[in-house]
Length: 182
Image (cartoon, rainbow, N blue to C red; front, top):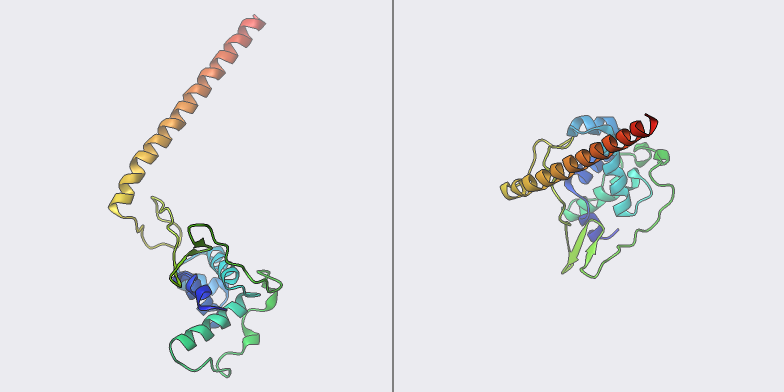
């Protein structure tokens, strides 16, 4: 696995993989990070896919080895963690290793980010105007919040217009049916 693949991992991916390395289950990782179990499973599945690993165990061990090499430490102490005890291969995340090609678009964007000068930059994501499960707070800037105000107003106006039109059509249909029946 190349350093570029590890650069695609977010802070949450890394935290979840470190939990797997520490022999923790999804529920334990979720409790420690303040997330839901399904959210942890999603982070782990995405990390497995981004790294091209067979399963969460292999991804966790690869991250640990990468971080040990990156920080100049010795590789993991096998007496400390027996790899066979880390969540078994039958986790259902991936049954066989399938190398993930990094698809690129003309603008250089890839899965999880754009590669520029050998560095991976995260793709811009649209921040939502509410706090999602697992977030401590909403990290939107004032400008992003101000952009959401007209977007929400337009969506409400369109929705109200559709409701009014639907009720008008329904009223006309009922009026014609009662006129034909009477």
